[in-house]
Length: 174
Image 1 (cartoon, one colour):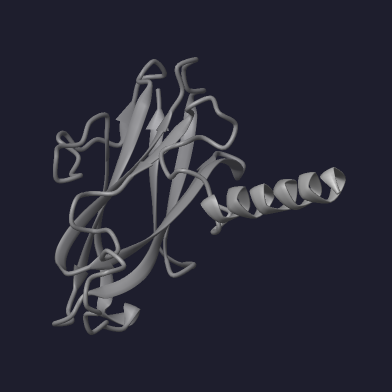
Image 2 (cartoon, helix red, strand yellow):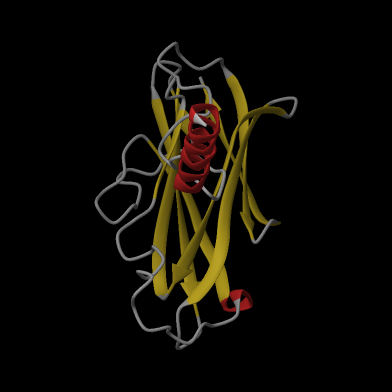
């Protein structure tokens, strides 16, 4: 009898633990390797509505357009790069990309915005995406961090909207 109760308790506990992270994803600010090489930050006002909020009409993701992509070493509270640049020193630990989007719809448009960072020969540095709600003009920033120093060369950042490439920009490490 004790064995059956113990087995039932273990199974119940595993369902509770599995339900804590039902999307299978990770904290969007955490690095998959745990070394904090990259992080994603969502600006205020661009997150999903709370579950108990009344449902708002949703616009089609086709109403969202990427209008600007800028690089820099810092972003402000609105997720915009403070001093845009395309050339960095190898000891610039953190490189941000700020993506400006415009939604032409009257209602919030839900879309997935993503970035794919690659080095010269297409070597993947990092890839992130986030499902966001867009209203009007918004900025979203992503960043990579390398405390060891960046190798010199050319890097590409591909911006995707719902998995489709919409912009590719380059920066260099000198």
